[in-house]
Length: 351
Image 1 (spheres, helix red, strand yellow):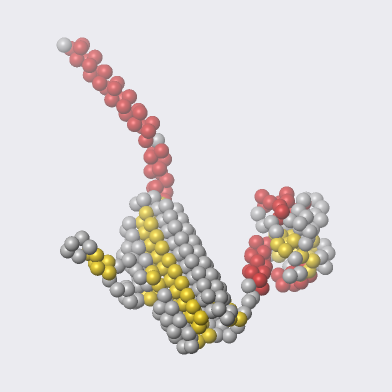
Image 2 (tube, one colour):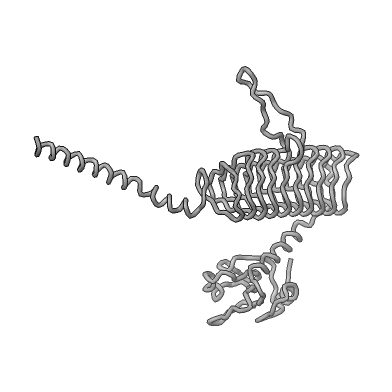
């Protein structure tokens, strides 16, 4: 694909400084720019590179003031980072604008297919599946019976969605995602064995959710496991049965959330966090990486850290003491030895 500075500036409503007809065919980092590439400058730490980059076009903020000559054509915009992200989004969409159904895909005759869809080779579309418009289903995806997929959703290779689950519009599910596997429900028996509890609910994922590779979201025992709109999940996350995650919450990799826990909206959860079941986490809570949450967090906007997790400022003060424990132990031993010697000296004196 080839674009001129003029075309890009018109799309971004930016102002051109330099050659409006210069063309770009690729995107690069500013420090690795080459002729024919588009890049951007948003972080002041990278400012020196704008004077040496070989990129043909650079997006900059409107208030950027160069200290010396720049060979590249500049496009001034309100926010260079946001403008660059918008161009990347359009680039990805145009690159993945594929349609059609591969002859090696299996589609049950009862399935309902929308317009302008793509279904890759060796995908399985089961009974009564409903697929919306502009959906992209890459090779080896499995949609079991009664699954619903909303408009403009993308399912990358190897996604598996069990029966009765619902995926909203504008979602992205990356390779290896498993939606709707059985929740971890087993009833202890008399002889130290376990009887499986049937999991007859489903998973409901609302619109504009993105789920990273190899993340698993279990179906509910009864009712639904629910991922609200705008949620972003990283790779390798486990979400157990009957969990509910509020709107626009983001969760980093290797986090595990136990069954029936309710997480509020606009929360931020770091990597490798463990959350026990049957608790509630308030809106706008932040949980630091590797924390263990063992009880409900009721305060809106709370920031917690540690295992068990507690208020982050208290954790940080406690950690200062914790780091000093070896030295404190050494001092205590020395005090004990001094006290012992003083006692011995006193006994000798009064004996």
